[in-house]
Length: 150
View 1 (spheres, rainbow, N blue to C red):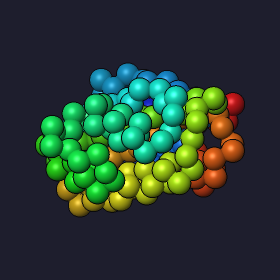
View 2: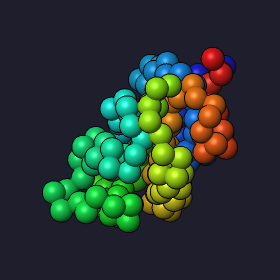
View 3: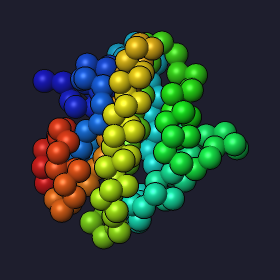
View 4: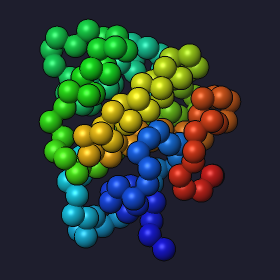
């Protein structure tokens, strides 16, 4: 059976936002014929608006004119040079002790899900993976889970 990572790297799973309870084991991507872009946001000590936007901007290399708001983040996410046929994996970790603003996390999830849908029309498969063992965040509990629960 293929590993979850292999399914992601090959674009075999539906594009979108998923939850994991622990890091996924990165498999051997040698057989993957699709271009793969893999980004990992820094571990989030605070899941607040400014921290989320800064992590996205720094990790994905948003331009200097990035306006540090959700609309600007979406615009930067959808104005990339990812080649057609590519698989894009963006990972984020929310540790147990992170200070989390549920409303901002929900906004981030919605924005990343919208970006995933945008990229489908461009023949790019975008996955946003949120790794966290926390069950107190309703927005995480609503996501499809990849891999086993701890």
